[in-house]
Amino acid sequence: MYQYRTLKNGIRVVAEKINYLKSISIGVWIGNGSRYESAAENGISHFIEHMLFKGTQIRSAAQIAGEIDAVGGQIDAFTSREYTCFCTKTLDTHIPIALDILSDMLYNPRLDADDMALERQVIGEEIRMYADSPEELVYDLSSYAVWGDTPMGRPILGTYESLDGITPDIMRNYMNNHYTSANTIISVSGNFDDSLFDLLEKYFGSRELSDSKPYLPNVPYLSGNNIVRTKDIEQVQLVATFNGIDVMDESVYSLLVFNNVFGCGMSSRLFQNIREQRGLVYSISAGHSAYINTGVFDISAGMSVESLNEVASLISKEINTIKRDKLTKDEVAKAKEQLKGNYILSSESTGARMQGAGRSLLLGKPIYTQEEALKKIDSVNTDSVAEIIDRVLDSSTLCISAVGPVESVENLFDLG
Image (cartoon, rainbow, N blue to C red; front, side, top):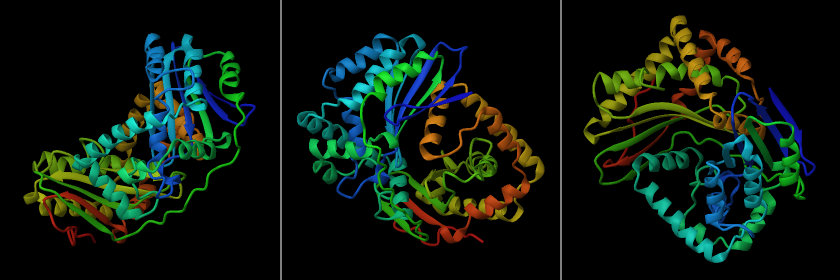
């Protein structure tokens, strides 16, 4: 059962007690990511994530890592387009240590100019690593294809030029405007008692913060854009993107059932028919990414340039077939059981449960219990699956991105 609190300064808390465990996962979620950045600020959210690990007014970077390591705990962070999360996993006896370190990082970051110069180099290497990874680069191109030169279409890491323009003062001002009480969620999953909430007040509720929420720009989906990055490499990395569903759309359960059959996992049609039966690819899959007021459904594959047209033809065939025939009752029933099994297994991790609850509360989504989520899956039927297939496989929204020894992807797919 979830418990909800609001700290004195307005930060909201969601906590799920699992008293048969000896561990606890704690996440501080900020409603801020690359979607909130101007062109000049591109990459600042991810840069802040790095800098909060570089030290505080009372702890060095080595002390932050060492204090968590000393109790056998873990500390991590990640930045997406719409949020940043700082999280720990420790034994339940070390909750005060975890909260002390997390609050110190967020409230008292040093943000030293010399540290920033070093971390620019680190992020620069991260940018180079992604640029040298065709599987990653093609997704950056895909984002630019469907959202263009908007915050959603720009890379989360930023660019060398944008990072060079970020100073300590700019970073502090950005944090003051985005790391606010109205824009912060604390999510907890694991074993705790009522003293947890007193500790949260002590470490997080005592700091006065702005209660404003940053502006969220609208990002219309751009249909029909194709982008190719020609590179002298062994494979073509290909992504076909369609307009998807947004984060609030309850038809996500029907989409997951459909894609369980179509493109997710080793038993899916794409994997079985294109990799297993014909050996044309090593990796091929389909999946969705949902955001506030927008989303995408994409199909990705990597293959030799000689196999590109054949793979595209086979993907087209699978799309046309499932759009025409939809799924049978037996296929839907089997996919639902597989989906429920996957969900239950994943929910045995306190980290996954903390992330699910924190992300949902931050984005304004309902937080479902396991029983409620399973009922949502059970409610999927052939009609709801047929509807979502037609919605997300709309050929008029197709955008194509590719990286590799290829010049063009025009007319690559033959969709009915």
